[in-house]
Image (cartoon, rainbow, N blue to C red; front, side, top):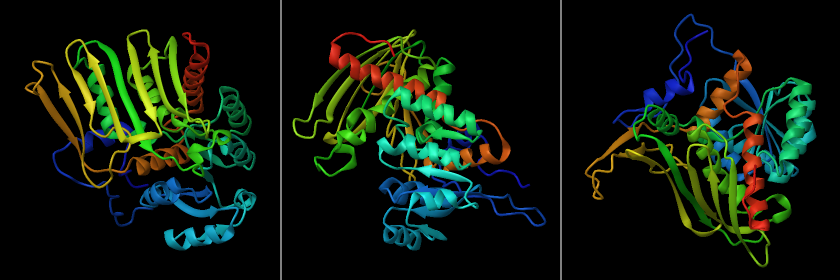
Length: 368
């Protein structure tokens, strides 16, 4: 087989660390080299994130082939298939899961349908990449873990940020002591959406700020601290009509330090994440929605003054974190090994989210 143009996640960020704006492009096949066998993917639903971001990204990969898409409205599936160049369109999820050619399923359904349909996919012998948050509760996530263990398929949570070169580099720098002893993570993630029909605003579907976007500062704080919080504190403001949490803040106490964050579905669009240590700090310019058409940047400040006198910038060539995620997951299927974000990690993340909600109710510190 020819060499993999993406390589490991670690290789990706090393190649991306450059001042030049260069897209990741698959290498041309060398003559007389057998092309790799792509994993045939099916997509459950025509969800916006799937048709706008994930499917186009995966279609550019060397290990992924999006071969089918399903919707409960067949016309929507057929329209998406025509637009995206997908060979098969199904009018039900069951039909897609019954297709013997489909090897893996991407599940971007509303949150309350993540676990039920991921379990159905596993029962059908399909590997599963499920959108975040993986579940509504820890108990649900554990049920999915049990299904994975019974069936032997690959399963993972679609936290694409953990595959992006800027996050891998940030963790490497902190491990190397670039900012001294890590003590504090701080961030926020907000957007404005008051549409009651929006999936993110339906409480019964698992909507709300913490589940939709607050999960990002939670998972990235855990990713960088490389440990689990001992206890958490949460504060929640709910929309009086839709009942979803529209503004949530949390404090996560880790053995080595603390993370603080806020998230909202009713504030201006904004995202920020920075990590402070005893000798400096690192800030990711666009931490969660990293663009695929321009470089990403992180700022490293040694704190010598408040005017940026000690700030340096590292720039990463344009890349698509959804493409990287798909490639790494497909390679795990073909070559063995672990998926980018495991079910076990998803359970730990959900435990923190549950604890934040519990703390908001009790007014006390809660243990994940």
